[in-house]
Image: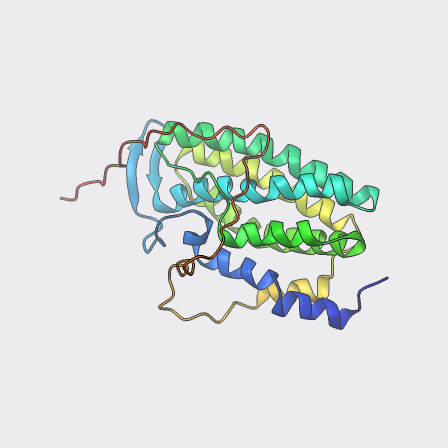
Length: 249
């Protein structure tokens, strides 16, 4: 049964996709420890060039994206009701497996600590898709993933245009190709509601400026932890040395 435009709008405006915009506005929800107030500030001079706060945040976001999009792809292969949805799932799996391998290599060379589990918001997306069945699963997958990829696309372009670090630039090139591929396969499902999607992509969320970090879980609240997908090797347990802060003067 086809979902009506009104029902779709309700899903986007009032449902899980609102969390997508929140997560993109607040990098701390994607695994970054603090929200950068000076993205252009150089935090380290490396063999591959200067590393800025924006560069470092980008490397973390690439890892965080794979931690929920890879299992979403597995769900699509298993639960998708059309060949196009299952093909989209295969692209998510392959794209993020390859991108994650590059990201972990870049992070190791630059001394960047990466997250090993998805954020609560990202876990919520996977929980929604896990609970969905039939055509609702197909619709939610196509629109949630199309929205998130559409939001991150300009972020990648900005990093690619501004970074002076060759490793980060190479990662941005691969991320750009991967995200464009995933946008394309989501659109090829024929399920993307562009009218509602464009509203979400162009309307910034109204959030209190004071809420710069997500609230702590309530006492006794269960926490969903996604198991690392096959092919994802966590970084070494040892924490890299702190990134040196350049001296002034």
